[in-house]
Amino acid sequence: SGESIWDIKKHIGYVSPEMHRAFRSNVTVERIVASGFSNAVSLYVKPDPQNHETCLKWMSIFGIEQLADKSFLKLSSGEQRLVLLARAMVKNPELLILDEPLHGLDEPNRRHVKQVIEAFCQRKGKTLIMVTHYEDELPACINHKKILYRNK
Image (cartoon, rainbow, N blue to C red; front, side):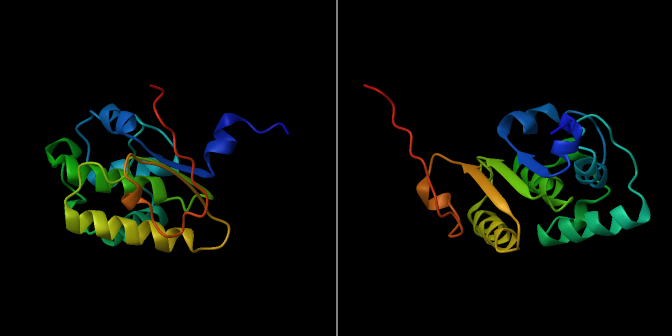
């Protein structure tokens, strides 16, 4: 219908192990979260006041607001994963694609992230695609699933 890839990406939030490995810049957590507004992996600008408040809100939801001014590279991998989840959700996407979102999280954070995903998906007009190796990681909002088996 004529949209550019950038027009389409405005409606998608995404997290994956590959994306996690791509964030190697020594920038603050808040700038990483704010980069979700532009979909850039390498564009880290200070958010404007309205986006700043939205970033803080999502950091608070994931329990990482106290890390806002810390370097992303100095965080544990679990903390980094929470930052990237906040980044994926910061623009309130219509489509949320999560590839192994609970990877690297301790049990309390795994439960909390599942609850956040569940609450996010209960909102009108939201679609979730989630990839996991473990069925127990799927939130209750999943109503269709495809299980892939290895050929023997």
